[in-house]
Image 1 (cartoon, helix red, strand yellow):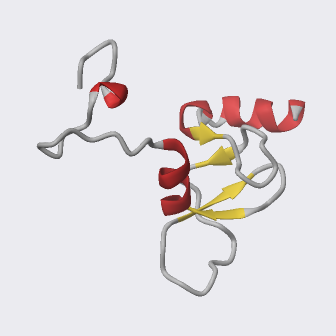
Image 2: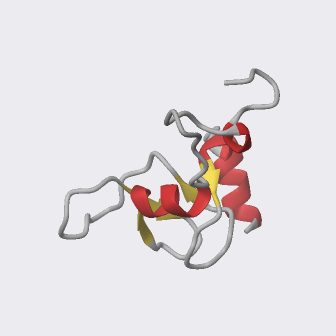
Length: 85
């Protein structure tokens, strides 16, 4: 983890790194393409710790709460406290 953390810091990837749903380490980099893609054509990311390949849609379902108001806008749970966007 120390080596991987150093690599993520050196490559300026800390801001786009999430917890991997497979190994639960914060080593899943969002914009990386895996070495070999699975059969379907989604967008994938690879975990730097366990080498698991995760489809970005799975991450969206896991990390973004389904909180929308009646007009189809994000509710208060999804509003940035700094910029209100």
